[in-house]
Image (cartoon, helix red, strand yellow):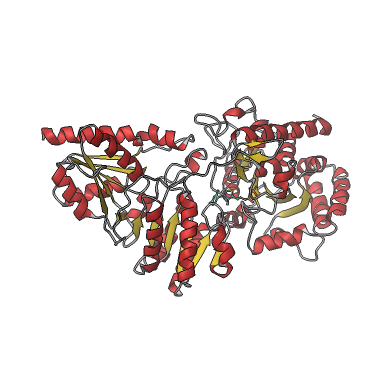
Length: 618
Ligand SMILES: Cc1ncc(C[n+]2csc(CCOP(=O)(O)OP(=O)(O)O)c2C)c(N)n1
């Protein structure tokens, strides 16, 4: 295609994103920012065999469209439809799946070394964002790539934004690079220069080194990236398609590690999103012409905002309370806290391991850190939880939002493992609220608990209503018996539920009670230490038990209960564990996914009936 035709392709890709995301919702502004970059890269590279690895993947809709997925685009993020991220199972050119940030450079270097080992000849490119590149993994990979002696291109898609405004010293450094007054002129001169650079790769390399790099970055010393072994090219205008085409054509022939720094605009081409990238990062359906979101119905508050309010309230009473987020102030409900307590709030960027050990230091130093990180991203910081917090009995408070199935983001984002990956850590306390009121009470309780780390989980979405109001205070390792719905009948069966599943357990118990099987519900509150006394006694009294949790089975709440039953010599009594199956769960509607994966209200009802039957027969 000619450059003009490619410009037309870029326009069509942008229009497809506007049309699609306005109808179904999805990641928006990051994708509008990568249109020209993707077209230029794909027009100048040969895929396959060339390999492109996208970091995180939320900005790769142009990639999906350019690799033949326009017909399936209307299924984006819908159950059994296209994933919102890259996925190796979805397409042969989704070379490497992602969803968590910071993996692209490591994976691309792996591809490059595999190519060298197999004596193949193709290019490998990693595309990463200005927030993702600040993560520890990205730096570990740059550190390796700079001396690996292999051909690899790293493209920095620098739009100045994480989801919220970007943070950190590296961001400040990028600001310096970005703000060169001579950028535009340099870009024009560089374009002329590139056009005059024919010939074999070594000359090109020399031309780049002595022309381009220094045209673009005419400082006495090289950029940070040059200092660690990369050819640095940029910053270039990431929306100037003819210029990007020239650059990538030439970069494709450069040996060694090359770093292309492209400046892009989040939301490019859609005025509202350009002006407010934060709001338009990920969106629900909206009116494309009027730029308006569908009006939100009032309804119940989200767990996230209940937590945010609770922590701010606590911080007003206790000046030792501090909050930490890893690049997710809005998603974790800390925006108001940040405004009210700027000196007690830390956004450390996409740096979960650092966030946790930083919090351990804060706790050791005498303050009360609350680290708010989604369940799925907390996986990054496992050793820091074990080695830096638990082993030293440091009271770091972990707040794990999005614990459970998250819906349209799918398997990279489901928070379905945290009960398992925390439950075997000695001393660490695990707790989960049944509703918003209990969430507030637990946050308060955590502030007062000083003996060990505590980890609280709650799901994506709104707090339930309709659970009984009478409440006992939160006490370490003590469950709450909610009794039988209606409160009159004597229970003949019992369900022990954890956190988000108390609501569904209560609905099941209501159905069972109405149909002649009065069923009590125990709200476990703590997975660890478990209230073994209450749960084993209830099991003994009822001749069996059903447990329900929104977590993988292995190492989950049900297994912890089973151990308690074994210890109490009750292993022979029927016990059904309702949990998520031992496989990765796809994306789709959150409630439907729960229903389809064994956690519907009817699944609970049936499990209770079966346990009852077994109890009667034994
Ligand atoms: C390990 C991890 N932590 C947090 C997130 C949530 N997250 C998704 S995108 C994003 C911001 C990415 O910004 P950047 O890398 O600059 O890419 P852009 O969206 O600006 O293109 C964050 C924090 C994540 N995906 N992975």
